[in-house]
Image (cartoon, rainbow, N blue to C red):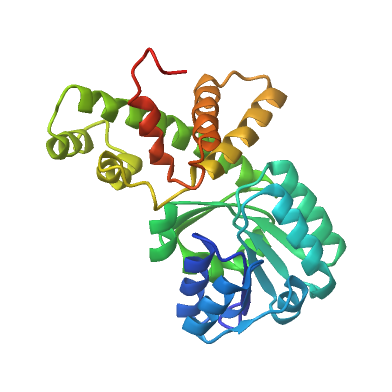
Length: 294
């Protein structure tokens, strides 16, 4: 596969839609499908590609199928729906965040149908998806990854092959431990800075210039101090990821105290109705007086 690659995208949410647009800019996008038709029509109108009537219809047209869905059950459902149209030799490229075991189940189904599967979760946030600057952590056969490399490179700044199928999701689990831990630390720190009446602009500048700097602080520090949580990574989705990590930790007999704390915090926010907010909304809990916390 090279410049003749025709890819289809299933799942056009905050990450999937900009990935589809970046594929279209590289003339790699053939068709799109989304459970609710509105996003598919929007991408099709902007790019001129077709809207598939079903995942199977998309798979019949596209030898590379990129999936980007929210949960393990969503991925397995989409895989079952696309199988009747899957062409022999096709590659299903999943950019969702699911468990390594779910990636293996998807791989088994795709292989039985004569296709190949690559689990390739991404990191870099909505901004990275929009600008095609994601970090891809891929699991699968090296030959399959090379065949679809133009698709991977169209959405990313880096593509790293981590091992066989499931390795991408295992790597994403490690990534999400760091994401969750940094969010805990940054939100607590900025809540402390507010209580100390430190000037927010200078505080963000000095923290970002030193060892405390991070992607999260740089891209979410100002917005969280302004109580703007509408854009970014939904905290309900990070909660889902953290539960995957907790299950892995139980299997591996490893203690993950930061993950446990993050699960408790994000569950409280979801229960309060803030599941669609960006994960930086965690600062609202960190601002609570100690007598009210927990």
